[in-house]
Image (cartoon, rainbow, N blue to C red; front, side):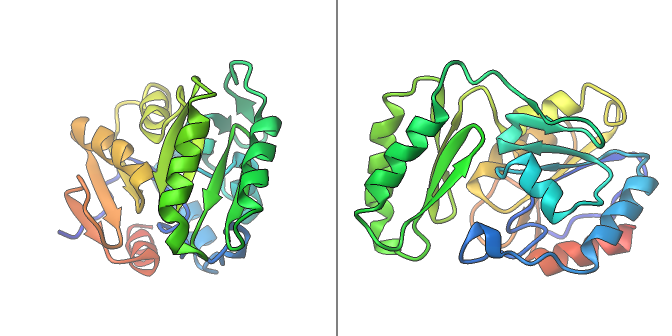
Length: 239
């Protein structure tokens, strides 16, 4: 079912990769549609600031791709929060040596051409898009590493597996933002495309709001858009 038009009392939460931009072979190869920044800015004004990005990417990366975005950015699955014009606020890493973890993953991945290690401020992701036959190996390897880091959890994604803080989550980021202006008291709408978005989709719907799955695949979402192009048209129509 297609989502309804965004109402004036909405609090809009949007994933980035696969939702606002097409998935690319590597994380740094994505292309931002020229019309996207303007649509987001108009929606920000229409919704009195209640527009946020919630992504597995770092907040600094998202600000780099959308430098004029006026809203809040929750990066690293909500492990860091970026308010416009303010320093990025991280959560407690609970003593995890993220650099050492990333080096361990890089050493393991070096034995298998085609794998891509994505270092993140609070964890690491191992991508196998260029080597899909290694999907099981990647999952098992990251699962084994997770046993050494009790404050991190395994996060499956599209053609990737990530280790991220257990205290973070896109659903928790949504719930946190909904406690504060300009989001409090509004109708929560969350849109995303990946397994990492399912908990946040469910959180929005549990609050009486709207969950939107972007692209194919099973989902708890009651609404669906075909791809980022359809998402952009939906945003532009509401803006």
